[in-house]
Image (cartoon, rainbow, N blue to C red; front, top):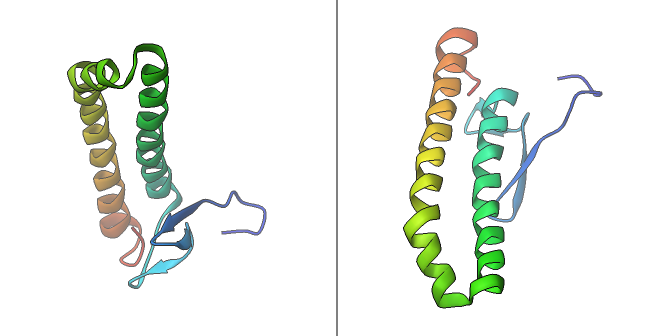
Length: 101
């Protein structure tokens, strides 16, 4: 990766992991990292939706709305994103390199 290329970072257990860091002898590819960052964004979105609904309807009604409507769709989207992560890892391990996920 060149010095001018985009840098991506993830914090895991208080440690920053960048897209070029080695994790158990594997590199995280940029494409895999982008899918993982989408999952993280989806998790962040949950908190924002919860806050907005709580402000609008109160905690009990917000919890009911999230449980009845939001959680199912969010889990479906998360499942699709994890499928993309899996595809990316498989492509990188099998096609591109044996040390890049």
